[in-house]
Amino acid sequence: MAIPDTMTAAQVVEYHKPYQLNTVPVPKNLEPHDLLVKIAVASFCHTDMMVTEGIFGGSKMPITGSHEGSGTVIAVGSAVEASGEFLVGDRVMCGMPRNTCGTCNECTGPDESQRQYCSALEGHCGVLSVDGFFADYARCDARWTTKLPDNVSLLAAAPLACAGRTVWRGVQQAVRTASLKPGDWLCIVGSGGGLGHMAVQFAVQLGLRVIGIDAREQGLAASREAGAELVLDAREGKEANVAAVKKVADDRGAHATVLVADVTSAAALACAVTRTHGTVVELAQPENFTVPFTELIMRDIRLVGSCFCSPQESRDMVSSITQHGLQLHTVPFEGLEKIHELVELVHSGTIKGKAAIIVDKEQVARDAATGIMKA
Image (cartoon, rainbow, N blue to C red; front, top):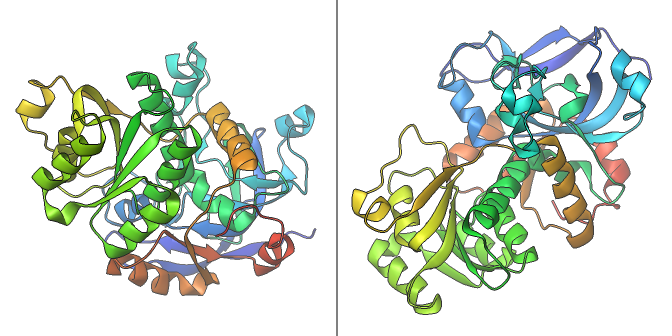
């Protein structure tokens, strides 16, 4: 495949300003662990809003947006070529971290599920210092990239690249920390959003009984479709939600809760619906979150943070999806020039699921009939 010298990229050029479509060089100079991927789909995440608002700061400008990408490998670095792990033509879900140090405790410690916490890495694609996937081509780190089986579509894979990986680990964290077993109750606050509707399905596949809480009509519908056994409207208030959860969950509350909603009141609600000595796994990224001390201290609620997932956890997620399937709500926009329409829809608050840009419609068309997931 001939690789052009230039490409189109949707870039953040200034904080609090719209994306700008620029013509930029194709990143052909590959480092040993690099893959050059012809991007098929790049999706939009809440974190992308945080990037445009300058919340992470310290990044180079301009920076190509999106940290959720999928596509086809068209070139590999020397170390990748030697290992044979990825070949030209492989369909992949792009990795987000780039050039982790390989020497810190997170990189070398016994717990593989902590690899993503390396703080001495070069950056994260589309978030900090490294260009992302709103482009025709992108470099990504093979060590953090996941090969896709034939029955997982590229359109479905892009939202999994961050949102899927994040909630997969979040549910696993809840299982580990709270020692959950099949039949236990897991509550998901924000269950009908882009992350939440995936979390519901992952939990159901583990045999957990799921309570979904959301505050939008679209979110309530998505929670039911995802398989939540009980769906509650957060707009009815904390007391009503707590009473409804206790009614089905032994009059005690959920064994654990996964929090993916970033509204101010969500953390307090998550703790309130969780039984005494239970666990709340925090995935949402509000600037601050507030929990009444009476919930945290007097009821011994364990608050656990979780971010992204490790390379092996990503492979485990894809393996599980291959076995069980996953129904995804994705709103596709065709072409990078539709980026402003995408952002407008996301900001409207009416979207159901995840918004994505189809960068290369030919790749998407080729495997449209092979995906076990509906995107």
